Length: 340
Image (cartoon, rainbow, N blue to C red; front, side):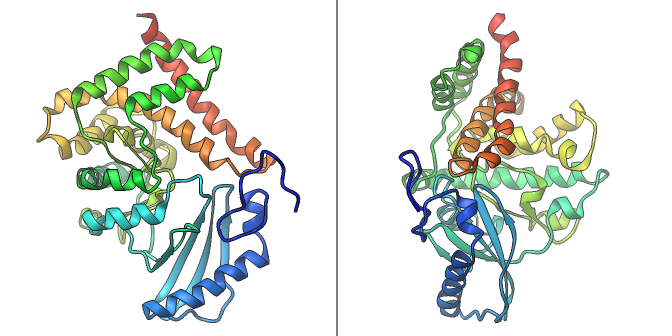
């Protein structure tokens, strides 16, 4: 295949140029992955059953295969190299918070391939509109603990390729977009970054897309939440911890059809902030949550830009509106602030 001048390098593990989904959705690529399974799994004492792996999903940024083994079902994932290195995230975070992550059977950091054992159902599958608020509160407390534990490994994460998107770095990234219609939000974003920096919290891991579909649990009970595991770290970055609340607070509405509810949001925020209450008074922490969520919208734009690096034109047409929507939200929220 002839390479365009602006085309990214081939995916790791492939010599084929072109969109990631077109590479992944080929027999040749699936056969290469299958050979890898049969090479590395036995070294871990795992035997793959001789059935063809299923490929339930292909996205512009990742794909999955499902395999059956003598130790149960396994889930394989491959990411585009522009995403955060999930293999590294799992490896480093498992050192400081092993009970909060899905275990990894095998991985290949160069190709960004890894296999995890099946962990059962997700919180999105087992919860409902009546239970999600209390269950999600428990997950957020647990997630805050993971973030606190990650402080000691953030430099290693960044050194290994996880982006460091601190508050002021996100402002710079927003300004660098160079879109005249967005300049109205610049000052509000700078002020938000200043307030967050003044608070003095350490940078931590940021999941980037924390919702109930990315949390494994065995049941919809409070005791089960104490063993919930967080997965899907392809959008992860190192930054201000409170940015995770941007997606987390939308979870009850987006996935469970609940109406907007400020009281519910406050309950979830306080559950999460209880994990930080020994650092600053909760009231002081609450005041900067809107600032963190405003800047987290910039991180979502950057994540979409990375995710679509290897997209086809139709795929970009399908998914780019998500990034554009975050930019529109920033302008809408920040404009009144910049006029004050």
